[in-house]
Length: 401
Image 1 (spheres, one colour):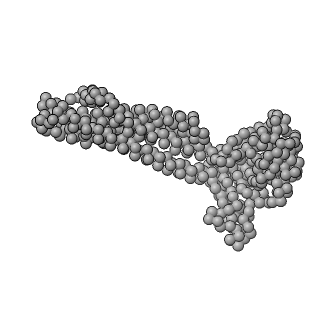
Image 2: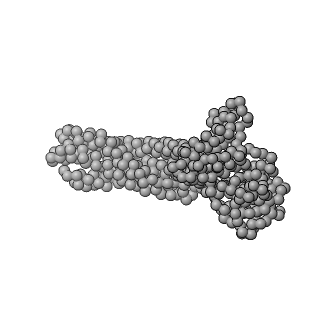
Image 3: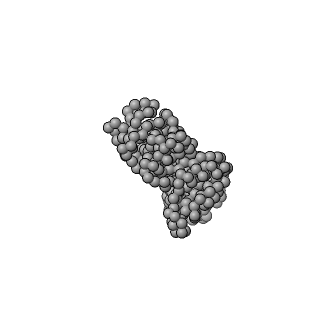
């Protein structure tokens, strides 16, 4: 019997019991659809987190006034751990691989224009902030070196803060006076909308010169510094230069330097594990579907013993019987795989459409892997019933009732 004849015979056998064939393939359908859907969710989460971290800025290094493990300058016999604006200026002037430094002093404050009020975050920072954070100004201008040097009372509004305080266009807000904690500031610019980074709203904040923040909030402690390297190839070099400069200025390593790429790799490792775990869980249902195929095929063999005996009596070889039943199992898994892939794509699309904040991404490899796994399940679990049918003695089979 040729392969084509075997396929025709297998399809004819399945067509004789359409409902049973569909119910047999249902386990594979659910398994494949689950694999595709869950992998698309895992990939969607990975893509979302990667985009959010990359949105922090390009070639970014983050410095915080802490050391991993809680070790501080105080524990090293020095002063209390802190970073200052002077540290940022030293890095900017002494590190050739560094393109810009944006130190941040962040304080929660009330901002008011006319009768409109809002609680927001005031960020004292340097003129390099828009370049370092890839956060452009949409109207007006950002803080200048002159503003910083003269400690001017000027402010640049984030998108959300502007929308809350002003009714007109962003250009109309330029030159207006707002009050921050009772002090009057001139609006010199409004930032373009940036959106959220993970759970942090980048638009619900305002920016003032860091020297003004030091004066009005009576602090010289910088909460963190965003530092951009000149190019992707110079990130590692910039990190070394930053560490060297800060170690020279501080009495111990009372700071932590984190590279954006390291954060990204850590999150990618977590989400890759999550995707593999979800795919593994879904694969279990696919194996259960394969066991269903084996059980139904065993029942089918028992029901068709007379047919098997007759075929053997007419000259069919063991190989022909094995091929016939094995092709029936493969046809069930292939059909179930195709339907499952289709349903998985539909389910992923519906999740993106109807579940807020959950975007799915279907990698093409997941469709291929899910389908091939379904076919392998059909072959593996279909072989035993097919072999059992092939080994039947023709005389015993013909006498079987």
